[in-house]
Length: 88
Image (tube, rainbow, N blue to C red; front, side, top):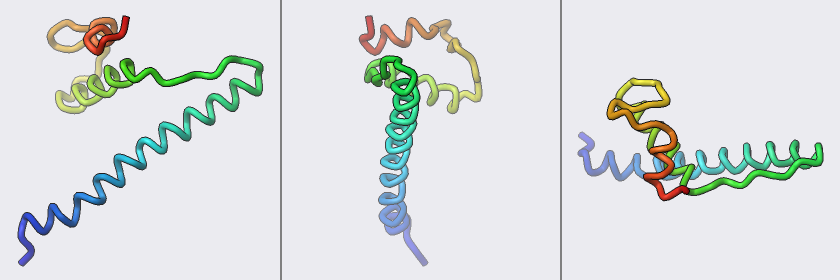
């Protein structure tokens, strides 16, 4: 019978690969959007790490609470989350 430690040891690399794959998806999508914008003579976008962190934390909150909303149960909204991450 396979032990928990062995199971975690087998699954952990897959979880790390999934996280790397998700970042590849973000990079790919940003590159696609920027190529389209550039083809139309528009400025390209860049990710802001503070806003990205705020968005990721809120996405995790919505997943954990099954509450899909712009506002959290404590009344905080998008501006509050951005400021909490240091965005001004």
